[in-house]
Length: 163
Image 1: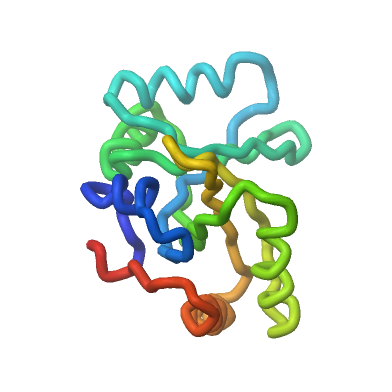
Image 2: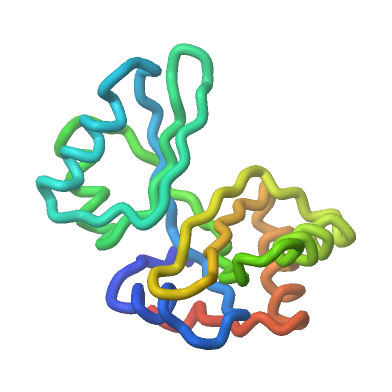
């Protein structure tokens, strides 16, 4: 089940308890690897009044993979499709952690010890706090379920029912 980062954006980014986990939806698209592509993408989102909450750009030969977490998601999809972007939606874990040395390591160790591969990840800062939100993509749907269960068993609150 994909979770739209919609009316619960404040609960994700402004929760006081720092051990919450939520599955969010990321948009990824392939764009030519040349100057101005990121600006063009952001301009199309701005025209739709879409806010980019997190992003990562990875080079993939003559193309780049742009990964975006946007609010509202449905409007972001609509805007990007209107401008002829081909998009893919992926589920990611969104795990708030303190911005302190060594705080991400236990999460990655938990995944590794349970044979859960982190396909990719990036982070964004939580407004008004000293916390980051780590966005992680696993490479297998069954392992995603196991990872979610492990995170909850290890003190992360399950917020997936916020839709």
